[in-house]
Image (cartoon, rainbow, N blue to C red; front, side, top):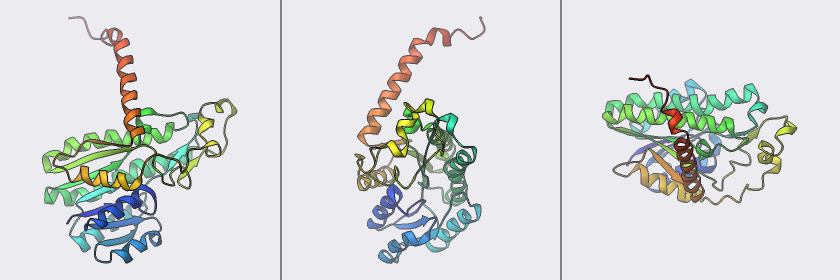
Length: 276
């Protein structure tokens, strides 16, 4: 039996992760900004589910959640940084306060929870840190520049972290999902208040009022949860776990395009060293 701390469990992938881990008999610190939204899990799994309020932008709540996990279950074996939400806007349309909140939640919130669990993991010389990213970090769609940026930051942070903690018996991994049938494109999606007409044919097509993909996404959250558990429990967890056919296709297409451009510009790239 292991102990998982999962952020953002009220709905969507976070909820699916929590339910799947609990179904397998593990302990789960089930968190949400509004703890009442996960109370039913505690009622269904009274011995293994610990519901806690957690806003990852709040230092005190993060520290308190990890402390409660240690007191109830003895420590956190697996941290899943899932809490977050979408934001759509052309780069020029992005509102400063909204963009700061986005980075505060996705990037600095992730850093807070990592720093909170690492002392215990280092002491035990074991643990897994899972950070949720998005295929957006790879394909960077129009209108998702800021969201893609926070997820790209999470990916870079995770790769460095993995190299730092691996000698200590700890692993860190990124999960890159594509479109899953959750409320991410509904309740959890925000956007800039004032669109600019010049971006109507690019970023504008992806605004909520023009989105036709909500509730039609191909991904099954329950299957995503099962895949995550399988990766975490494997002998050699990957640095990056791609979830969904759309993600696998998009990821490979993006890599191919990047490699083709690198090849096309290679002579110029290699022309900048001192002559020896």
